Length: 243
View 1 (tube, one colour):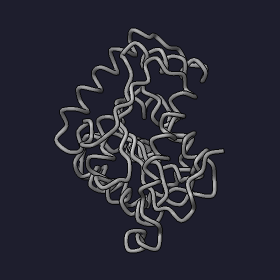
View 2 (cartoon, one colour):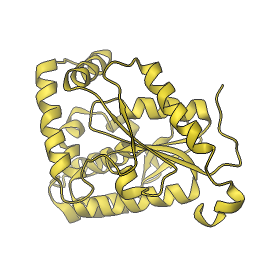
View 3 (cartoon, rainbow, N blue to C red):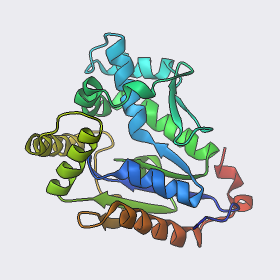
View 4 (cartoon, rainbow, N blue to C red):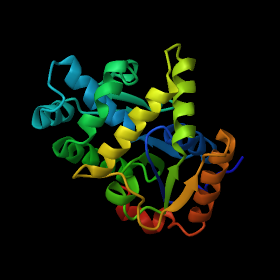
């Protein structure tokens, strides 16, 4: 099994549009490398679920941000994958609900919400300095000095097919044409938002997974991380950055 020496400080960011499999690939690569996995999408989904459950309009920027800050969002790192906690309780059952799916991109575009969650993510990076993190602004905003940056993407058709397969596996209806339209709309919103827009981070390795299997995608990420680990600082030298 491929592992990263425990003495190594290593942060690997994976950014890219929705429906590319970033979360699944990052989780699998982190497990095989014995690194932590930071699912930032779960944090935005948690903020969305909290707002919906409290009857807060999802476009009410400051109310949604205050709700997220008040919830003390954190991960239970003793579980695999880490469980998203709000107010000290698991909120995992809400993260993939249809109402959250429909509103999370709106919440993720709110500057005040991003300020709260980016701060939490950076704090996690200081206290868990051996991790793979995925999102849309990880290499560009949250961890611009990451040891390795990956921009993971796929063709629109491949992304729609994968998302449809995921929904069907959950027993939900899936119309690939409709999914493709929704993904295109989300790409547009994510790339045009004022704070933390979706973009290829400077210095990122471009990884097109359109024609790759899941295992091939994971292997590619592992190889990039392995090469980065060869140059990463040992903990003795990076102690000031680990929190």
